[in-house]
Length: 329
Image (tube, rainbow, N blue to C red; front, side, top):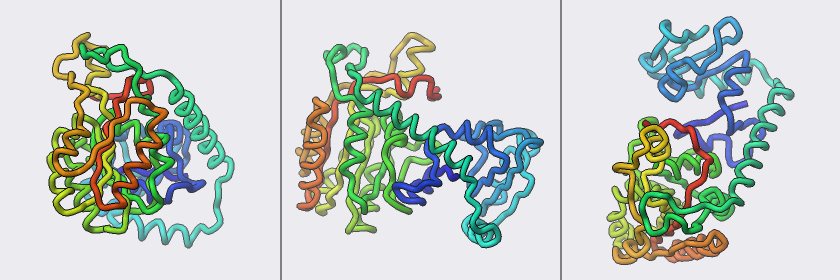
């Protein structure tokens, strides 16, 4: 079984029986062999603390960078075998030496975890999602459930699409639902969450792969950094489809900050008409306030893009408890 992260997302295609997507912590805790193929033991693996004790599990670390290979070793974790090499070359050679090994029971265990989490997502997608209680006029309005929106988005994205994500809470939710269609079809802000890269990434992806359908999944906070690039998209007929999860807040920060400090200072945004802004910049815009209209609106956006028109879909989303407890501050 394989977990993929960052630019490696999509390496095994949209549906692969060996691709595990949820609850990596369980897999790490119960594995007897872990291969870190280009993976760095930084905060994403709790600096190595997320790895099981050495006595119970063997660890092989592979990295082109000798510095990244040994990050936080000896003090927190230590590999049984650490090689400065191309992880791809190592894995290909390993597969030739141990052909036909399936580890069927282990694979089925992780598949069951994925099925249960996917079912939980679908159940939560049916719940009402209210506007954030951040002092806005929409604080008690039923808005679009972001889980439902992203499930509908997953169903309409084309097989040859490139997905660019740029945001916090909305993008982290999308990472649990959207499935990259193949290798080199996913771009994100990287491990440090460098917000604002989305519009530039979308422009570059569209120019490098003109045959691809380009989706830019934007948080409303991140959209503020690059929305002006719709002028560029329109002038050069770059048909990007931007989906803004507009929840009127820096939600990834607000989710934890309010719980800890009982204060939403600097977390408030507004249910801004980003669709109108995109239209004023020469593209087109679609507003979604009802989840039942999402698929129709998304298909309309795809039709506009097929005509060479960049389009922004402004989805007014409510809050859910799906990511409660996530780390942000």
